[in-house]
Length: 464
Image (cartoon, rainbow, N blue to C red; front, side, top):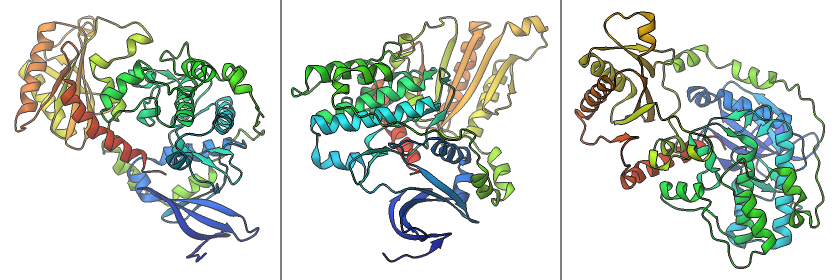
């Protein structure tokens, strides 16, 4: 096999996957001769990009899960510069590869894989794990054609019923409630992704697909898809119950399992009991050799860029929040585009505030600010004036400033917004302003969103 080096008892072989921060190599356990997959992570790059917690979360999650249809993790080894995650090797490749040449699967094969997917996701949810990035690329096939769920890099570990807030995943498979910029149920979101996968297995194409991210968003929010003529009535009915845009009406896993079409030739695959008191001593030790100043420097750097889902959710015309809960009509918000860095944008906010006799008070997160009148006010009077600003980073030299007012004079609020807009346009040829009270130019939004979508995809591929 031409092994280049040895890590512990493992002899490394060829590379079978690669990303920005990590690569996956095939290896052999020299003690028993079994093949394993080893994810090799660049430790310094992970620390610099503030992804330590994400790596630890992925390892903890994989240690917690013990199911025939979930990829197992064996151990973690650390060196001065690398972290080695030794995992079960799955030889059959991704389901996405199979779909690329088979187009669509036969009904029995699609049903078997869907049954195994639902069993695996059910086990995850019972353990409080929500995958949040279910798609054919993250579903592997073993030598016997059985499904294995992998890549828990975007997973969340929560108690059942807890709401999640981070919008993440792959656009074509994401549930509509993630795009509404509100809290969502991780279980319902995973079920939606399972429904998209089932449709793709049976139809040979995605139910929601569009190069324009805004158009894709609209299709998902309306559950606007077309079934091919070969789908049976039972298949259509099950898919429709899964792809319900309202998560409160969406079918649950127990209901899916009771479905007549699902029950055909169903052989349940059950998970194993595992020690839920998972220790991260090995991965923590692996990170300990990283110099302390890396973390200190990182505290002064900006946080992760805004992702495409969050940017879409800023558009009033595409807001889905009304599907899930009532809206508060009292709060007024304005969003202004900035072709400046975060620090430059904050300075312009302070200058705009000074122009209209306001002062800026930075919060613990320096990108969030409270804005007050300059003159002294009583505590009671000050509490009735609620104006704030937040800088959201889209790219190193592109930001969105969100100004929010829930109390106080409308005139002052408008003057501040006008002053800030003028300052942000200075020394910039292009500046976009998105106000919730105005109509959004979806053509220009599409350009911005497609650019952000590329950034988001690159970011998701950083960890394989």
